[in-house]
Length: 378
Image (cartoon, rainbow, N blue to C red; front, side, top):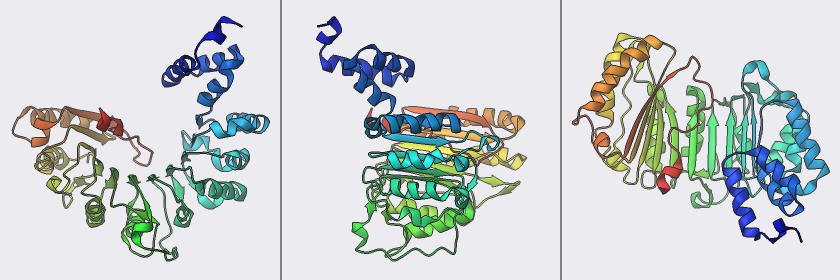
């Protein structure tokens, strides 16, 4: 027996787990080829989290691998289909996606992020395969982005979903969803919800989530994490209603806000953090208006907004603008605010406060959370 055969399987698993955690895929490939005792365990890590963002070459290779080695299908737990730019659109053109989706047996997370595409332009075979995946009892996380005329009806069969993310999807206000059977308590209880939408879509989805007896088949009264972009005053009441639904369970809240729009002060968005007794993580994505009023109001508004946030352990503030000048001008004002001890209870109690500046022209992209939920477990 070779020396490597004498290694306990638990030690081999620990080594492979460490390599996977480092995202060292080349070393995992080497392990899979090194010895038969490492092959299947290495393959399980190699195929656990698949990301396709280069279109036809990678998708074709994945389809061939899943077809030729059927045991690999059960290893795929996470599938990320992403387009990096509008000049590299491939998702709606790629025929192999339907075959890939059809072969998945135990998918837990699906991220479908085209740069921009009409849902109806996606081939019918791919849409049918997508519907099949959405009905998998193993699916826990669904993230959909940048799809136009996306029917909300495709979400009505997600029986085990826990994490729903909609980013810059557009929906038809005329779509009618069927009445839901059973009581509200029989709906799917989400633990995490992300809504980064434009104004019409925010109104449509918000209404469907808040209606009883019809609409989307989800409960939001036990959310642990919530991300909402609330860029216009017309969204404020629905946003407060959504937050109010999960006030007793919410531990992480991220808000996208625009205190000033086109040089005009918005009806400032405020919530009472005293009504969120379990909240520990608070993140704010602030769209910086390129005006002198924006420079003057944002620091003052932040002090007022955070006035009741007393038990926050982590606070993240992201300031986003397409102007270097306005970001640079705002930074010393925020520094002065953060340096003053009386500014906010949140700045006194937080274990970590992080302020970032982001130069960006387009809001309509998929942003990762500013604060990860793993911070709650530290």
